[in-house]
Length: 283
Image (cartoon, rainbow, N blue to C red; front, side, top):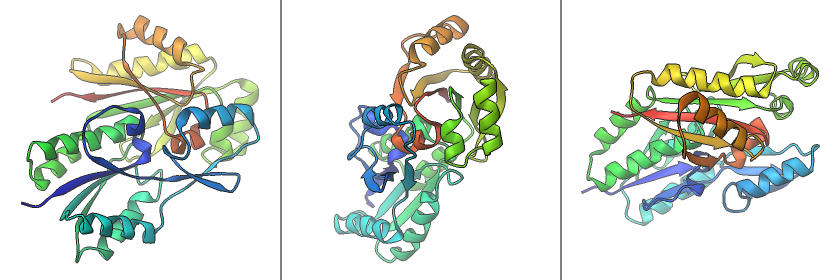
């Protein structure tokens, strides 16, 4: 029987989630003033966000693995005796990692079959794809059934952020300079949503943090209406955590949710004070 291995990028929060699955990790790197650090191993979330808070002029960048690195990784799996690899990745609209994996897959197809899966999402939503695939592998599911299930998950997840500052979004080219200027002086708090096409878009601009957090819960309630779901919180720093937990309790009646930090790769773009509410719909 063909052996299968799930491989996921470091953007899926699994560095901070306890599980017993054999999930290998392709690590995107963070460029911290010219020093390249592997997300999750050479720089962890708490250290990264502390650095951002301490140095307001720091503009970290992300660096995806090269094709050569990816080929080496997949050939290593072949050397271990694996015949198939399922790779769940951050949305291809947010990173070039998926496209790089596709190219590397073509280069090693004579040795190992690689199945790249564009999750069209990020954070724990992305990690959930890997956990699902790993569970199905342990249950003996076929690759065809696993890929079918992962495709279904794309329409069953929700993620929305409230962002306290537009600064990092502007610095990394996610918003225009003009939008950042207006946001700074008008104290606009944008809502960022993961859209069906895998992009993150500012769907609403709100004047106060409380109203922004309440708007997230309102949109969440609309998404899960009448359905069973698994909710969770993701964050890029502790600043809004306590406030948001109270808003969620008040507006949704939910307590003791799973809470996971976003990886530094995500934090590079949304900054140190963003917090999100997500879920997956149950079958």
